[in-house]
Length: 114
Length: 109
Image 1: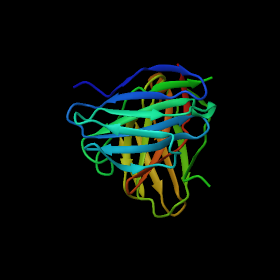
Image 2: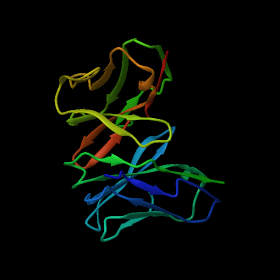
Image 3: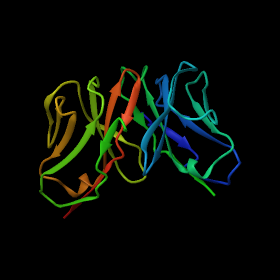
Image 4: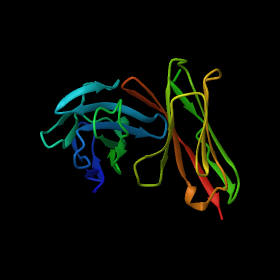
């Protein structure tokens, strides 16, 4: 069974731009969660989507948004990029709500904001 | 205060050594504890999880939780070069996950 895939793997943007990241979960998984990973803050939860609905949200500004499609694929969008948004963005999928199921991480998208 | 604190290291040990990785947490209500391993350029993968105080063993790995001290540990016996990675502790509380910043471990052959 194929793992979680994320595209693109690397991205360079400038301040003020916006970016869209994509995540394809493991086949059959219905929950997708997004995380931001930085050396100083570690892994921080952004949001979780289950059956196209946002079920849970972390403490990030409204510039960070996401959505999930009927095939469970998910996208994350960051608008008006800031230098501090440079990070590894990880997507994780689980069979059901992440509260009750193991989550499997993708390799991440490395975003650099210049 | 962060929910989970973890010493970032880096930690460097010779092959065969016993490794101890540690985290502290702030909320005594936390009940579900996990350890993840993350290799370079990869996402984290779940190593072990436990609900309660005490020890849980899986091969060369032992997870320990001390709820009275709000302290969690991961021990690696007979460490191997393939154990070189970043280890993240994590706590789930309801539907929220809190991760440590990770400890970088290098096992030298």
